[in-house]
Image (cartoon, rainbow, N blue to C red; front, side, top):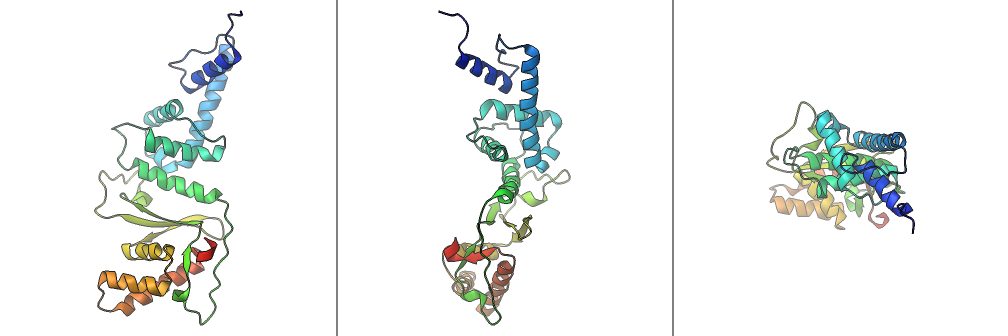
Length: 252
């Protein structure tokens, strides 16, 4: 029998070296110069996609810490997709499930999720039919829900403000509600919500029309003038329809 390693063994050695060249030997039957080229190309591609997908996280992370994290991602995580634009989702999964470093900022996972949402919405394939609101129609009468191109999110940290000059060291006293959506120009943007507007979206997604949702919110708030809450809901829903954030419930 041949003492040469099998093709499968060579493949594993090749992959292990590319993932972690400091702790795995290169295959004996491949020129080291070529292995170095493969290793550098692979690393630079992964690092580039991560840096582009998480620009704020990259900006606030030192070069040394960033490159250690990318290498740790390559060593620990097993990607489940060959698609390049899915590398950001795989990196997010690594941060949420496999990353274990007490020196990481406490907000890192939430910041990464927020940055991933922007990419995910930018490439999401969805056919959205805008709501036609004609003159005289009451926006509270429709059964509406969030468009697939609009995501309602809540974070413990103000992720939309984090940057080199602002890195919170503890969670906020109350959640930060954000509505991230892709507009008709295919640009991803966000709106800040308050607890009441976030609750309105929640009730609309549960199947209530705007009128019923507004009345329930007024009851929950024990508001002395429910009409104020109802008019506020009418204004929000009208604005969300115009932004194509809401669609007919049957289209969900």
